[in-house]
Image (cartoon, rainbow, N blue to C red; front, top):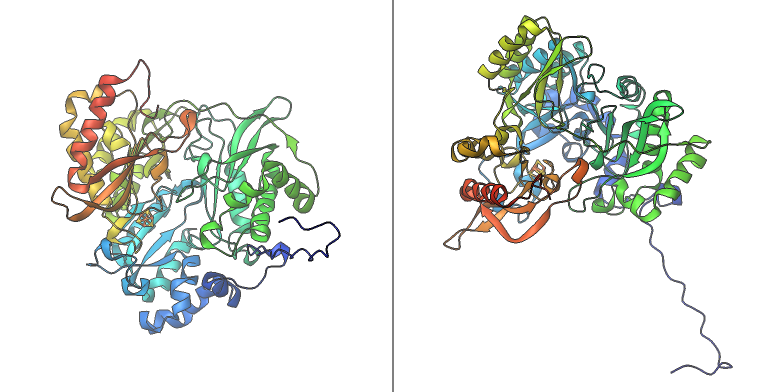
Length: 554
Ligand code: SF4
């Protein structure tokens, strides 16, 4: 009933607004356990405790908050205790999954390594990590079976060759992705090496940036191929030619995958090389100050940008953090051609680089040592990792190319892989990851071998490698949603109705010209055992039914 106009009006009830934990708006109180741990002690301080206390006292001496939170800032995660099936994840406490060993992530900014550095990583893996090593799809190398007692020695060896693990994980600026062919590619727009160097030297390990709402991922590449997956990073600087000012970067923000995937959006600003670090710093500070901290699943910068929009984000960046206007700039042209740098390619200087595929990122310390030796034998001292889990050797004289390709192939790194081998990726999976539901690495390796036999007759008919990304859970570390065939690990029913390891299928995702997220196909769930059959059927159907030039993602 509408009250008469002269009736006494009840004062409108003030709507309670609940903050999202944005520091800049005064919501400073810790809002969850993660925020509490970061507030109680700067996570970077954990390094001293590891060296002075835990390395002597062993696993049982570690403070639980350090173990499950601050250790990550030093690149350390507890690995999954063997023998606990994925189906139980979610029904038991995370600490029951903890093993007394760690995964150690070594950050490799720009994917740039010397052969000396690669050999050092390999030797550390041999000595302290049961010879395990994985190349990740963020250009890092991860070791497993690491003991806290060995961390001081490991850091000493890494740092003696200029490598470190600081902020390799945690709510902080993670590794800076860079083009693996920066400074050598014939088609490069701008060499982003100086920008990456300035950012890492000035800001990694800076305590004022070590408590962000969540992780912050950076990609900087001057390659026209967009070879650092700029579409799905929190901040990306993408090489572009400005018609008046020359080569620089286009600024993108807010990309990311996981359970709420978003493609990065352009701010329409052109950034010269010498301003890249300052602008990057401004964006990180916005995230630190205005980012949402109340709920972990809304704490990435993409949610802030989704709420603000690009115009407000750019305005806050300019007015509150840079104190000046940015220069408007054009969009970079859509990339063409493969991004993975596999094969033999000419450099600007007349030498060649050789890109070789690791089997779903799985290598070993011994393989890394052998790869470094192989590179040195042909006179190279420079190597690169890629976001497709590949390894590159730079500066190879033409006369040495064939010999190097053969030697790499002999240690399982193929420069001329089948389309299936070339385009498969896998995350860590249940072997070591506490969040995993299914096995991924070994499954991917077996799938490739299976497909090479099953699809041998049509290998040459596949116009573009069909990307197959295996993920052990919904977290999308191996980029589920942007693969032609994205596989998200879960328990699925087999023919007899038993729950077994398998995958929910996402089809038709991609980056570059067809950037978009794969569709989750209702009913397309496949057991791990049936994966070969399923992929074979899909690929044969695609080849039979595709229109001229139609890519798988279309
Ligand atoms: Fe672990 Fe899941 Fe990430 Fe795979 S996708 S590494 S299982 S968190």
